[in-house]
Length: 193
Figure 1 (cartoon, rainbow, N blue to C red):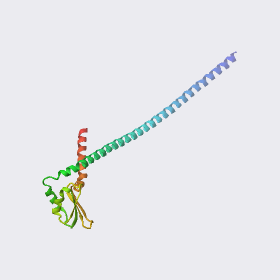
Figure 2: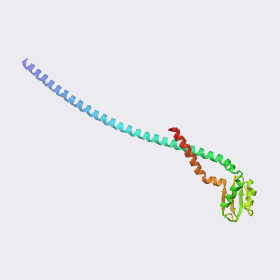
Figure 3: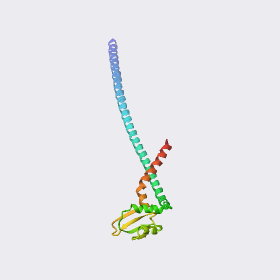
Figure 4: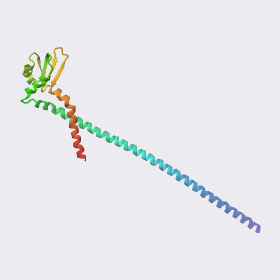
């Protein structure tokens, strides 16, 4: 029986040693796995954070682009409205230039004109007699669209000169538009501050 007890005791001791070694190995393996998972989780989090950062940057760029696009769209609409208002009111403004000193204005326009043998003089119907007094040899053509001043055409129709209010307004229209538009933007920017 003693020998049986020794064998049992030996087996028990052996079993406990192996069990202890197995527990230690399991704990070590568990620690390795946990460390590997922690590293992997940290790497995934860093990757996710970087992807999130890049995505947020991209969204900010898109937002900024969209914001700039909308601002430009509003500016273009505002410019178009300014242009429409100028076009709408231009004819009336040009007609208002026909005041009591209009004959002197017409005379000054004639003085600016090169002296050629002008065959045709296009004028507003109200300016027929005035045009004849300055261009007695020319054929006077009445044109409703001319609010003031005149258009001249040479005999061979190769030379055309416009010294009408419309042409003069056309030459400065872009500058006037830009000036009005800039003034409106200044007012709007002051309003935003």
